[in-house]
Image (cartoon, rainbow, N blue to C red; front, side, top):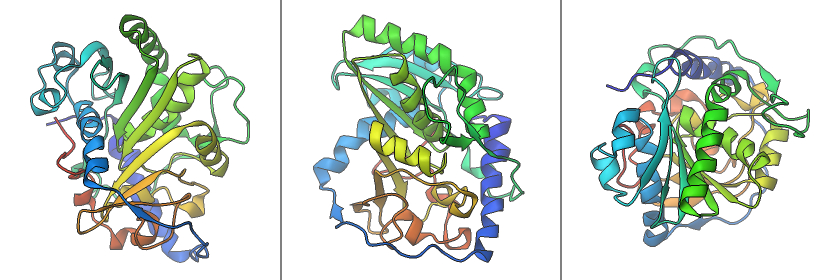
Amino acid sequence: MVRVSSFSSTTLLGFIGIALLALRVHASPVRRQAAFSTLSSADIAAFKPFSFYASTAYCQPSQILSWTCGANCNANPTFKPVASGGDGVSVQFWYVGFDPTLKTVIVGHQGTDASKIVPLLTDADFVLKNLNSTLFPGVSSAIKVHDGFAEEHAKTATSVLAAVRKALQQSGLTTVTVVGHSLGAALSLLESVYLPLFIPNVTFKMIGYGLPRVGNQAFATYIDNHVEIDHVNNKEDIVPIVPGRFLGFHHPGGEKHIQDNNSWIVCAGEDNTDKRCSTGDVSNIFEGSISDHDGPYDVVTMGC
């Protein structure tokens, strides 16, 4: 069974408990949104290798470095691991390598064990805080993020940066794709802001699954303006609706929402309140389902 850090098994769980308070707050008015589109089967299939890479982040570093992690590794047979770390308890697993077939360096962050979320509907002790000026030099002080996510990211930031530099040098590639599920998606989103500040002339993209809200409106706007992002939410998963908007948290754009009929809808804008998108579909945790959190995302259910 995958182990998760104390942060992932309490703080993220606490998001759901604190989300209960949202039921006492009036919903935001529905804003006009741009037209929707539905992804083709080919578009959905293009996510598959990255979905497996996000799932791979749940595996032990020893499995990743030897590329012997079963179906997750078999799905991307040309991957070349460069570094992996974390203990899955106090520090989330992470890994870096490159895929010569996809022509990108991959950075993966471990997510959370969904089975630990529902039993712990507790109040969350968290605040929105400024990004660390050493790790995020020059980023506006108006940008604030969840302090637990920021602290978790800081544990591995410099190690990941060194590994990405090594992978770029070894591979000769100029593209980096950062992936993750749940807490791993939150860490990957922070990574997609952090890494470009120290690695110029490289294209970065973030692909996340079951992404909780990470920061405030200024953070979401920064992501929209600086990061190429896709975040995929599965049906009535409740994790993407926490922490609540009433606490000052906002999603960036880039949502792809898997419908009950398994079609994938492109949701325009931030926190789209249309029923075809996660924020509109799951207005509170009683309307959601934690069983949707791990997937499947097309054919991939997260875990090692």
